[in-house]
Image (cartoon, rainbow, N blue to C red; front, side):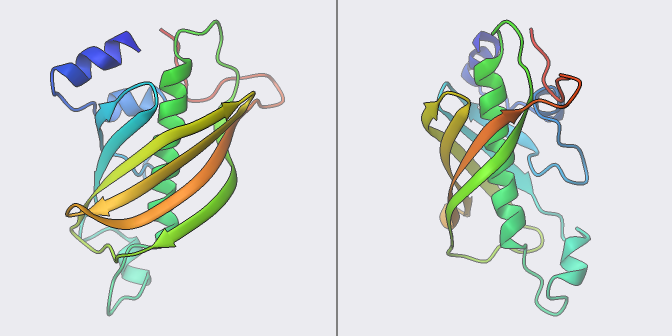
Length: 167
């Protein structure tokens, strides 16, 4: 993670190119705009939720709020990027990070159109192919979502790697 650490030390956020080199998610289902901090066990990112985001048209149109499941997805994507970055430099990364378990989620605050959310994910434990993580979404410094989850690398039938690039 040497390049990542250098980028973090210069205080320059890591943007879409950095993110899309490390996880397979793409717009319109990519819920990370930029990475603010990244180290061996934690990641902090942010996402602007534009007022014209299509999901707001159908999720309580008269009182638009961001679906909690999509806020959780942002945390899961941050966790996938943390896994990807942790594995960079290993001989060959085989697989794509997939969600295997949601251990619990708490929704504490609504998130709406025009909000910028801060997304955090951290590694609690790694057991073989399983990565046990916890994460959160904050809005204006206040907790909106907390979730614990697990991920594993899933290899497709042809043994292809999706969304990861090795240095």
